[in-house]
Length: 309
Image (cartoon, rainbow, N blue to C red; front, side):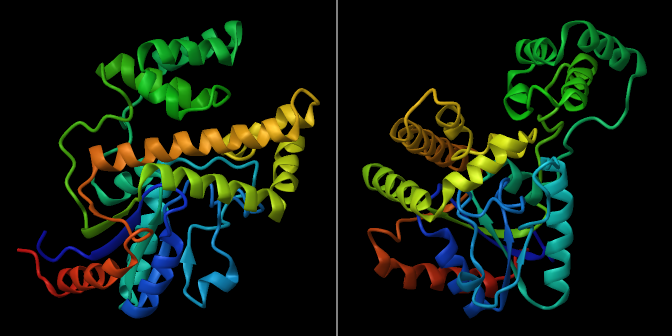
């Protein structure tokens, strides 16, 4: 990793203190922050995405926050491109890029050199699936993708016909998922990944408390604007769609809030599993062991002084 740019990454599930740690380290290390969260890009989704407030930022510049309208799509490829531009911009200023978030695939795609899909195209295959969608509809098209490439289907909304067809096209031509790198990906940066976690029971308690606080802060208002607009991608965020049955009179508010808590806990579990299986991280529990932060800072300092060769 000789001469690669240094990039600090703070990752992990929701409610473990990523935001507070990132601001503290950015101030101490002359850093600027890039959000690694797939939902914080949307303007107006502040409470449900736990978006860092202007006060919390304490003057530290943040990138890839509030850069899309609710009706716009935002892909892994978009984040990869814009995140790398942000790293370049921050590095040119002589500052340390700090990526903070819990969307594992986005962060991995940013840090490593794999391509997100094949570059060549086949008109015949594409037209075949376009005709299929015209006759059978988007849901059936998505079902077809789920049968062939469940990995891609999980990450593509059933109404995003263009992306579904692209994924089917790549799979038919290559036999592998559009999300599967062709070669073992190599890191593009000399990164140090701080993984934050805590005891599972305590984490779930903190998530439940955070959901209650979000409701008190006005989460329902944000969810209602999504319910009324029904945008294709941003509507999928946890903490929003769970309220739709309540708006429709099919559930009580208490049932909707309980669903948000459950989905948030499940997502946190998936986040932890993803990072532990896919990326090399240095794991810390600053919730139960705040005194270890000094040791963490020393490890980061040693990494910053080191020159990989």
